[in-house]
Image (cartoon, rainbow, N blue to C red):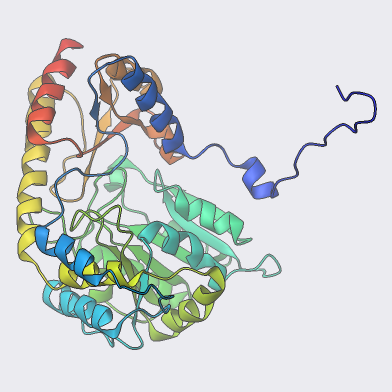
Length: 388
């Protein structure tokens, strides 16, 4: 209550979108993690996808060497050398030829690129301002849409379809942008070339922009996952990151690539946002995109972690989605209550992400991010077995 001479302070008015959105799912995980650490409980953190394998020394050295004596603003398009290095990787990995001046643009991590992308194409005054995306899925597709004044149109992904978004469920009268993400977060599902051809053709037929989140494309044990750009660049943009591929989550280094007209729109948008990749990070990214050898070891390690858990799930009778790519495992909860099951695991020091945090279709599952080292994975499995 205000005292004499004071006026009562009014509540701060927020953006209605911010007011209406639930707390970002991983904030709660961070709080639980901190609480357990304060209690001295040894933790095995499979919650947030932040791998701990050391960044390759060549990349780290390039970062150090790239630190300038005088720091100046970086330009939005980044160094041409960076775009050329990325285009070289696209050619080697996917057989896709890109113009480094017109069809590639750097970003400070894929999260901010994904969040900001709808701003270039959506406005509340537009009739056709829908953005479709799979659910369960990465929360930023929805959040970026809503802050841009778009209409969020989630499409539920189902196990019987391999968690592949079915394009015929996307309403062409309302949808301007379609997001796909394979290998998928959170399920680990993968897409074939023929599936991507189907989606690209549906979007072409209905004049829908296809945004393909391909941040996990370079982590695989079996067949290399394809890129949507292998099918077409027309009205298609791939969002690609060095976070998992090269162990650079803290560097914030990503690329957007594809249709030259769409990339030109992003290039026009991004100076207003005020984000550009720092030059020393660009130097590290050049080293990362130019080298494929360090990724082979990361694939081997993540493949071994994946095998440890899938062997455990098989012998324990735990249902999960088989995958040989990506960074996540999607596990069915025996009693259907993903939050309660995650809390049971937490008491053993094992942190997993409840599926409901990834939207409709996620309840009844938990997601494991293959973060801890191999020995920690083995110990976590021993602790998990105590619950069975």
